[in-house]
Amino acid sequence: MELNTEEFITEKVNEIVTAVGNGIAINALSGGVDSSVVTMLGHRALGKKLRTVFIQNGLMREGEPEMVKSVFHKLDIAIEIIDAQKEFLAALKGVTDPEKKREAITQIFYKKVFGRIVRESEAKFLLQGTILTDVDETVAGIKRQHNVFAQLGIDPQEAFGYQIIEPLIQLRKDGVRVVGKALGLPEEVFTRIPFPGPALAARIIGEVTEERLQTVRKATAVTERMLSGKGAFQYMAILHEDRVTGMREDRRDFGQQIEIRCWDSVDARTATPTKLPFGVLQKLAVNIIQEVPGIVSVTYNITTKPPSTIEAV
Amino acid sequence: MELNTEEFITEKVNEIVTAVGNGIAINALSGGVDSSVVTMLGHRALGKKLRTVFIQNGLMREGEPEMVKSVFHKLDIAIEIIDAQKEFLAALKGVTDPEKKREAITQIFYKKVFGRIVRESEAKFLLQGTILTDVDETVAGIKRQHNVFAQLGIDPQEAFGYQIIEPLIQLRKDGVRVVGKALGLPEEVFTRIPFPGPALAARIIGEVTEERLQTVRKATAVTERMLSGKGAFQYMAILHEDRVTGMREDRRDFGQQIEIRCWDSVDARTATPTKLPFGVLQKLAVNIIQEVPGIVSVTYNITTKPPSTIEAV
Figure 1 (cartoon, chains in turn cyan, red):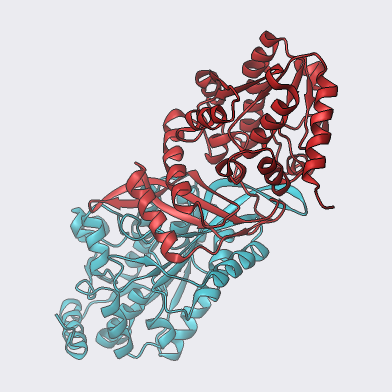
Figure 2: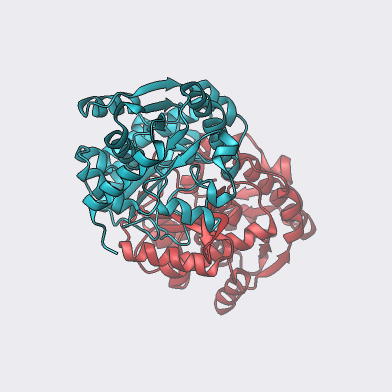
């Protein structure tokens, strides 16, 4: 089915207007494509009746809050930044199982941090950027996406006290990008590579600590700097828990390993590793080792999805 | 300094003859290049006064004892196979630290299994394939090689009751190969890729168990089958302890990861990852996932040595 972008936007704007009526709506913007498009759609429908918050959960990429604020300021949309770093880090302490990690983030986000903001705002409607791939993966039991509820038998009205509106739920990533472009988002936002709901917590195997977040954040910055503009669908740096032997200044340095994944994909349902030139891979390894303390080894993932998934956690 | 192969062989044969005199010598053959060359040198010097044993420690590659026995049978050298699988597995139980793993193997090999054989044989001389790179790495504190003693302040005569003769200690891997060829070893042996002393235990991050050995043994067989003849110095499959998310038959399969390393190097002092064609890497991942139960993800190491080392453990 071909997506008629203008029709889609008109239809969704009308749906949001009808659903919210004279109420107040709220949405959480992460800076990713999906939540950015929802922010644009929501503001087109509701104007100032939509409050948009950016929750600084401490799991974001380098310079993320500043980037988001500046982009939307130019589009005349005000973003409230909420600092919740301590709450997220506390909820993640000691959690190593990937599903429990995702669950801890969902709980702290919806029940505590965002839940509190929603209650205080008296908003009865939450706009959310769930897309079809999130639903597919959750229903298939591959990975529990943090923003999928109905399919898990959770009634948000009952559980959290608000209704959820999901205007993008029929789309996949490629469709979301087209809609984002039509809504006037800048290119660096609508072409932005996908980034997972649990953010950098999904890029850490094992426990999420401030120190390990710093490590993976630096490796992510190097990876995004070096692999952007190469036409890949998504790319990422993953911090492993396994230690490997390395050497620095001719002495043993029992260190950490970063795994790079770089995917070619249209809609994330299937994906293959990008055939990056070998020189790029080697340069990437050199830069990560030089710029990220504690890393002595870098690998490149060569598995397709399936049987791999896009993210490791 | 250029190696004069014939002079080297004559010199070493004479040294061995002089040292052993009318005594009995023994050596442990692992099937690797170094111990194979020592076996050839030793038999040239001592004939039947040298007993050569192959210790089946359960950490060997697929079909290894059969291969070794057949190769040396054709060269008229008898090999005794000693089954010590249970003792090695028991010594490795619960050991996860790389240095402790190496140490456990050294201890069980020299003090218990091989030590017992040496005592029963009444041999007073042990021929051993230590090479210069082993010494370098041990002295530098990078990795404790299982066959390096003097440099660690261990006197084998005192500790184990025998003298150690190390005829290859001035050579690096390239020199050892040249000597092996001149001594009449078949090409598949003298060109064989290096294999570490702790064998597959060095290819497992975390605890060495029978099940994990089976996994890494299968992955090693696939890797050696696919990467042989491509001109690389060494290639290996490493089983990680970290778990990653994967999918099989559209369901989540929280599985294991194999890391492939393939090195270009002359003497193992420095090394760079081989620029394998991308198609080979992808095929390797597909074959490992198909043939090795429990593996959902495969990576390729893109780091140079230094700061990496050749082996991970």
